[in-house]
Length: 148
Image (cartoon, rainbow, N blue to C red; front, side):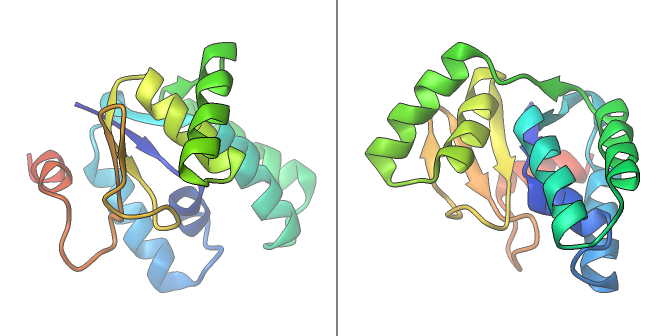
């Protein structure tokens, strides 16, 4: 089963929102099987921006972090089909285009879950369910994946 990871999980792992969130994000990412944990290219682009703007890292440091994450997990590219589906998704469900691209990319890669603290927990589109991995009660598929 494939899962996609949203930007906020990576940002937390980079220490953007404190030590407690960093530790939780790193523990989560280490528990996930690396071969079936996918990163949308969109997440890496957003991570670069967050690290430069919010965390005040140099562009070189942000770039190094993005490259490191890209090496750690398989990537989901944003194709023309992903973008077109995302525009429909954004229109139909009042999502930002960037959130819709993330979800559309996850669907294109046949992910069952999109791990995100920012998107609507439980929202399902084209077989992908958004779930907050830090919720007190984890989605059963996520729980099964990290307990193996």
